Image 1 (spheres, rainbow, N blue to C red):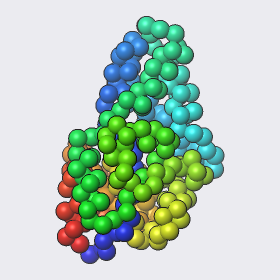
Image 2: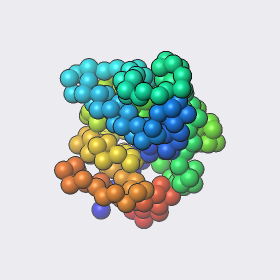
Image 3: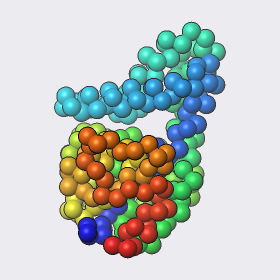
Length: 226
């Protein structure tokens, strides 16, 4: 059985933040709501591609430029393209956390673990998210790959978090809904916890998670039993 971690590292986008309302931002500018998922997939793809080529760009920059490409193909926007992009991107400042997050985060604090975040986005967006949720005091540090030199799932991103925390990767647990994030963290030597809120199944080509739970509220009990 794996040892209980001393540091829990949370992914933010989709893991803690509920991005379902981003589809509303698309419909509000006259675009189909389903384009939200397509756009976010393009955003991640291009961020990963830059990382694979030893490049890097900020999440917001890639988000805006990829959104321009997606919305340019929509014939019936109800406002100018720049205004539509601004409206969609400002949706990040209104996101809420998933319903299971507040109790799950507080439960994990009660296990005695240190809590930090590591996002491919900005720490400012994460900070605002936690302010709205009343969770700002629960995290020791908010970290971003913008300071790591590469996006997750590159090893350097997880190594950066370990260095900032003064912890060995083997003493850390990465929590995410993204299998690609779980795989990257496992390859970097972290234990992992995959949150499967949708029952979608884990891809067999990625390194399996150390733990699988259907909500964040289930994870404190798993760790307490270790």
